[in-house]
Image (cartoon, rainbow, N blue to C red; front, side, top):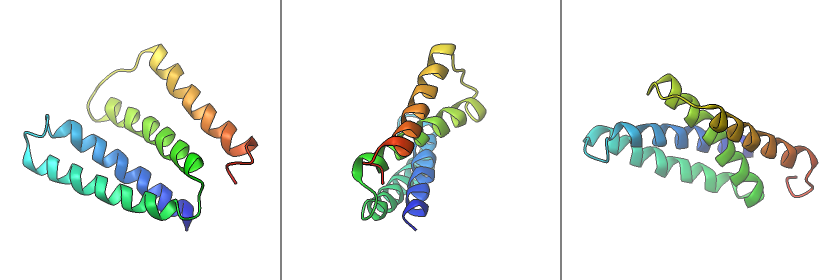
Amino acid sequence: MKYLFLALAIIFEVVGSSFMKASNGFTKLIPTLIFVGAYITCFYFLSLALKTIPLGTAYAIWAGLGIVLTAAISVIIFKQTLDAPAIIGILFIVVGVVIMNIFSKTAH
């Protein structure tokens, strides 16, 4: 269940970030309301995950996957581009999260 809660937190964080962009600086009401609701829901599920997953581990996974998915949404939905340094940086984040989860005793 703990990783289901973390996955839901990540999904709602990505939805929230996407609607933050769509809110156009909080000038559009519906995207702004979706953003607020998504972040409240995100942090609720993150709090549930943190009952059993160490903070550093949960936050690394949450932030790392959130960055990857948000970057993908920015390319697919908002037609933004990522240059080579951005892609390499994102890959470093993913590799860091994987290393932490596979090799760190803190992650378990």
